[in-house]
Length: 104
Image (cartoon, rainbow, N blue to C red; front, side):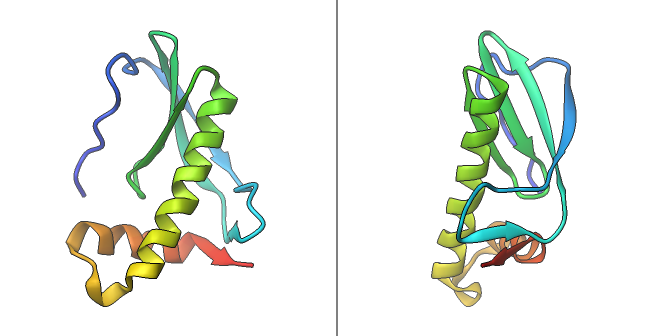
């Protein structure tokens, strides 16, 4: 899996939380997933290395909201594209997302 490149200024020590809710009516999590929260230069970054998805915001809450939105968008994009049409990296992302997310 390729490393995620964070936006400039987001490198710092941070903490990891487990999220259990996507706050979305269409999708839910089958299990909690780890999200790393970092803060630097007035930007918070929330990222999950397994999905290679991240979100940013002026606050930790905004970064988590952006992350959740990006995760849902990626799931829907990859689902619509179809597994047979995905390259190696998107296919790995799809397999992870399919395992941890479910349609409501």
